[in-house]
Each structure stands twice: as C-alpha cells, then as structure tokens.
Image (cartoon, rainbow, N blue to C red; front, side):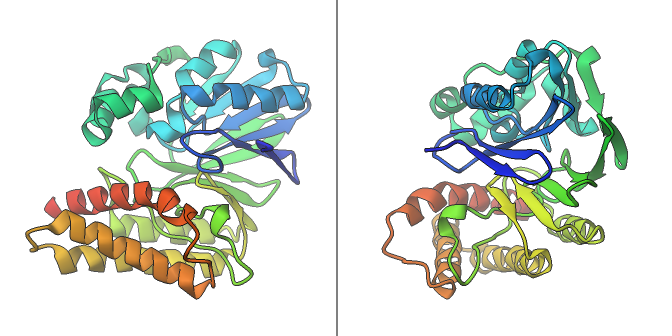
Length: 311
C-alpha cells in the first residue's frame, strides 16, 4: 500500500502505519527544499516519515520544524526520536503541552492509566524527552515564517486544553489534529463522509469544542487536513455534522448516566449512533472493517465522556 498521498501546495499525507493503515496521518510541507512535519505518530511511525523526506529529496538538515497539534501520543509519541534525527529542527507545541515533552513521565503515566502497561509499551515504546532549548511554545495567534510561507497557530481547546490548529495561508487549509473530528477515508461513499467528534479522555469540553470549530470556520478554509484521517472538503456541512455529533454524544452520556452498567451501555449507544450514520451514507454495514476500525474509537470516546460527566 502506498503510504504517501500528494496534495497541491507541496503537502504530502504520510500514513504513519500506527495500529492500522490510514488511521493516523502525519503531514509534510515543503518549500525551497526545506520541510516541516505536522504530527509524528508513534516511534514506530518514524521510518514512514523519513520515507516521505527521501521521496522529496530533502536532507535531514533541512527539516526546519516538527509540529504536533497536541501531545496525545498517537500525535506526538515519535517526536523525541525525530528530534534526535533532525539536527536543525525546532519542536513546536502548545504552551500547556511543552513541559510534558521536556519531561514525559506524567504523560506516560496518564497514557498507561488509559491503555494499560502492556498495551502502552506495544503501541508507544519509550518516549524520548526533547531538550527545552529546542522547543517553541506556540501561543494563540503565533506565526511561523517557513521559507516565506506563513503558518498561523490558533488555540483550539475542546478535545484537549493543549491543542492548537495550524492555518496554512498558502493552501487556505487547516491542520486540525482532533479538533475537527475523526473521518476515516475507508468509510467514504458517494453520499459523503462519516465524521464525528473525538471525546477522548481527559479534557473533553463540549462548549469549548463547539467554539473551536466555529473559530476555524471564520477563516473560510477550503480543506481540513485531519490526523484521523487525511483531507476533507465541504467544510461548512461537515462542521454542522460535528456540532451535531458533540451534542448527540453528550445526550447519549446523559441518557445512561445513572445506569448500573453505564460503560457498556454507553459504548453500545455510541456504536449504534455511528452505524446509523454509516447507514445514512449507504455504507455496506456487513463490512468487517466497521467494528475493527470503530471499536477503539468508541471505547476511547466513552471513557472521555464518562470522565467529563463525572467532573
């Protein structure tokens, strides 16, 4: 399977290969034989990211920035290893996330609490710290001039407090991390795309997520490059679907909140909601990919909703 997808404006989607194909994307932006990475995947993703650099004939010395939208490890787990490879790169992260990349011990402990020790090691391995002097803490409306190409950073809480999105003025596109939801290309049909809000532990905040989505729309973007997964268009319609998805999942949480078997009911109802969305798209519901691809997302969303509710 081809791991690289080329887009206009020197943007390449890289399939990081994390867990399953076309699950976690990294992006390479190139200008004047220099490069920027947005998202890193996990340590196991690094070979795929380097293939994209080789494909573009760019030297490791010419990687100027490694950027992560937030510090969840499917987005940032490989950052320390990459920074060891790229001698001239600066690492760009939300100010709230920087300390956890300098000293990842708390981040590791939190992830192990969610996934368990064995699953954590299998998925992420050893998280390598990044020296503080190589880190840029990108506050709201921070701008990086990458070889004459402006990248604007917007604080976008809702999925996590340590989350920003990056607006690339040249392509009129956002790199959205998890703020603009999850939309796997495997589920695309002639009727459209499946998109839903990510309510991952531990900082899901429904009003903040609504506000962040609306803020992105103010820029009238032509594309959204999602970490999960790749480019989507028809942005206003998808934004409406995301707003509905936030409210729907919150309503599901409220409906099962007092049940004895709350977690299993919550998972069941979220899965039913996503299957109904796929049915509306005329997706083949007998396809075995569905539950494989969605089960993990349903579990993580359920955990995040419960943590939000219990707060």
